[in-house]
Length: 65
Image 1 (cartoon, one colour):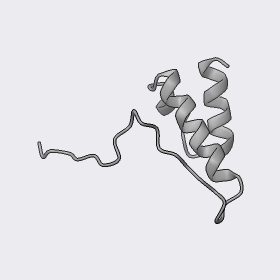
Image 2 (cartoon, rainbow, N blue to C red; image 1 turned 120 degrees about the vertical axis):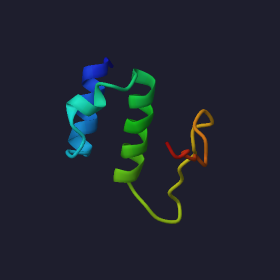
Image 3 (tube, rainbow, N blue to C red; image 1 turned 90 degrees about the horizontal axis):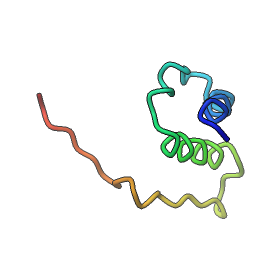
């Protein structure tokens, strides 16, 4: 799937995400976001699981400018 197809699928699930915003991300990041959206949109409950990508930090901070 190419970048534009991934963006189109993301926008089907999250209509508030503009194409102009999403185009700034690389394909790997967009793929991860699409997988996350797909998980959220599917069955939820006790058997629902989400595994955090090991390349993304669990906690982030921001320093004041």
